[in-house]
Image (cartoon, rainbow, N blue to C red; front, side, top):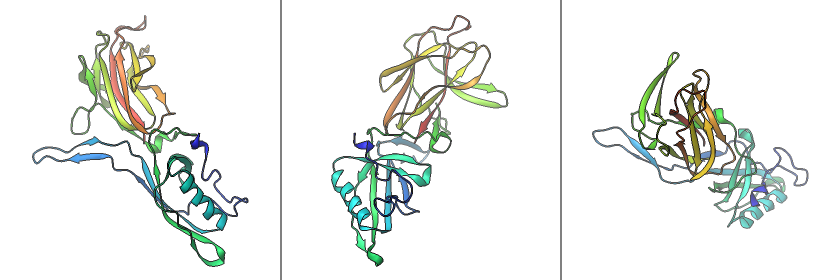
Amino acid sequence: MPETDILNPVQGYDPNLGGSMCPSYGFTRKRANTRSNKKPVGGQPWSRELSNAGHAYELSWLGRPLAIARKLKWYAEQYEDGYFTIIDWDSNGRHYVGHFTSDVTPVLTKNNNFDIQMVEFTEIPICPMVQYNTDWDKEAIWHYPFNDYGDQKLAVSGTWTKTVHALGSQNVTTMDSAGLAAGDWAQYEYRGYGFKLQLLKGPAFGKADIYLDGSLLQTVDCYAPVNEGPQIVLTMEAMSLDFHRVKAVVDATKNAAATAPALSWVGLQVMR
């Protein structure tokens, strides 16, 4: 399992190497531009994901001993056709899997130390990870059935209706099914890691089968004795970077206490 080979498993000084394997502070963090963005002459902009590429870092190690310079060269050569893990300790210890995609060239400086600069680390999709990011507040984004321009982003099959629910002082726009036709579905495709699925829960909601990339995960019951509003009904964290499809299929069944088997898709929170 190459993902268990971690370039910088400790944040600080490594006595076995006489220095730190962590890059010098202030390196560039860049998420790959994977979207095609268009703007028609007489309309509003639209975009579409075209690639499952991830992050790319331009890293430097300044004033490091020979042992670290040699180890960086080894990682570059050993995993030229593979991948390893690097930890971004400056961003809460987030893990990335990938490999170096530029030369590792140590340059001798004063005191017999070396500078290794402008080394690009590129994340590789679909690879397993030792630890998956769980910083949902800072690293995740929301996808809703409609974007800010009113374009429908949620694919559906069967009868679904755009609905605005007044929940307290807030209006929530959802995509709703009466839940009477088993097999009707709503699906969102995204690029990223794990997700949290948010549906409405209340007395008039039924059950749905949730699929990930074509495989059944579980059946969720959206019944609640009182209207609870948007609720996270399913969380998946241990997922590698890729294109993923989350589908909710109408089960057409309900809890015995429910008044109806409706289904209401609110949103999908996605780890980036």
